[in-house]
Image (cartoon, rainbow, N blue to C red; front, side):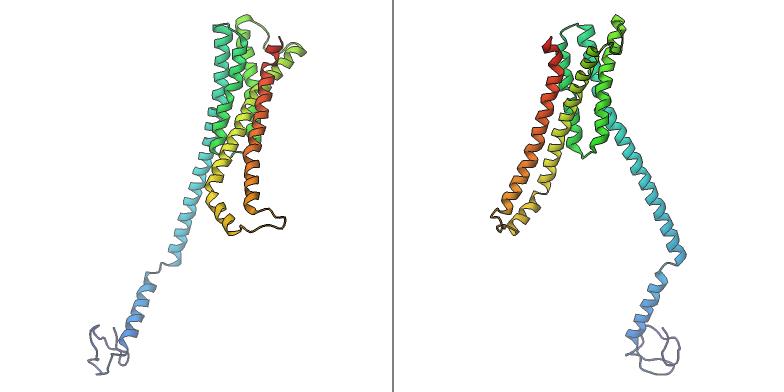
Length: 261
């Protein structure tokens, strides 16, 4: 360090300047603080370094966004293959075994067609919150493709037309497609109810704390805890009732033609 009086170089341990013999005791803390600040300023990177670091971080962020987008696309492809294409292939396989290989009663095929799509849809919606419209389109694709594929397999054996030839056949095709679609929709509803139930359990602790804090009576004399219980019951049973309704429709449309005959 330098002496503040004569500016000559002085040792760090010295208390008196050897050149001017002035006392340095009061100035040493300030000089040490100034030296520390100078070291800190020297350690601060320049503007060019900061700009390079910002550019590097922006490149990393863009790469991460691209990876997330590609993973999202891969997830969509995987879900479509697992929850739409796989049940479609299983339905076609069941038709081939029951109608072609073993030539048994078609009621078995109808029961399998009503039961098979449900668990796929359930496990799809039980694990994640999906938008309904894209999967509704997928349901229509699954139902129509299944029935047309079954008709095509039958045509390969007895050379019958693939497409329905009259109004009665068209009605049967639509009813059979509806039974498959309603089965998948039932699984979607039940899976959505299960997913919502899991989400409610995660936030149950927070809700219980809020209920305890706000446990006073409302103006109409109904407690907040009672209102919360009512809302929870409506959420739990509402989806279940709708799912039971779609199940009933699926069974009716799937077995109507066979039972009627």
